[in-house]
Amino acid sequence: MEYGFYHPSRGYWQSIGEVPKDIRDAYPEGTIEVPLRPSPNHEWKDGEWVEMPAPPLAREDLLDYLAARRWQAEIGGTLWNGWHLRTDEASQGKYLAELQAIALGIRSNDELWKFPHGFEPVSNQQMQEMAVKARQHVLQCFALEAQLTGAIKAGTITTLAEIDEAFAALST
Image 1 (spheres, one colour):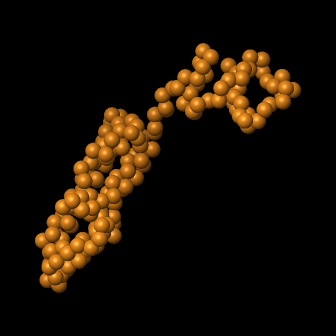
Image 2 (image 1 turned 60 degrees about the vertical axis):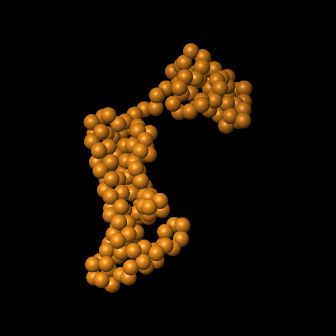
Image 3 (image 1 turned 60 degrees about the horizontal axis):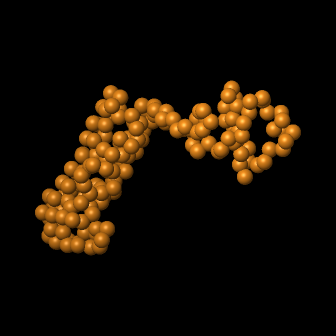
């Protein structure tokens, strides 16, 4: 069992087992046993734990998180004709290869394409639409990252939740 202790000038500490009496007697005068601290954002005030606001994240941490969140959204896919369309880097390259095959006249109409739900015949026109949709999705992700970068630098976005909300609103 764990035990919490508090002293006005030393702050909070915790033991991972019962503290022998001789050790407790050596604690500074004014030390009291307190309930375990609920989180690092809690402070002992007036006989109870009070939740304090989390310290603000550094701008660099927000920008690092933003870049990772954009990448997740970028490769997370989008919808095309009600089907999930992959947008990871390998898939983006495959769309370009298919566009080149169409341009060279070596791609047959209605060739099979593998979607997450299975294989479907895809015409050359549909393949072009898919490539455009994937590109639009990737550009939308980068545009949102650029917009949010400006907001972070201006100080109007200060939390990870605000970044997550913006990406949740990103249309697929």
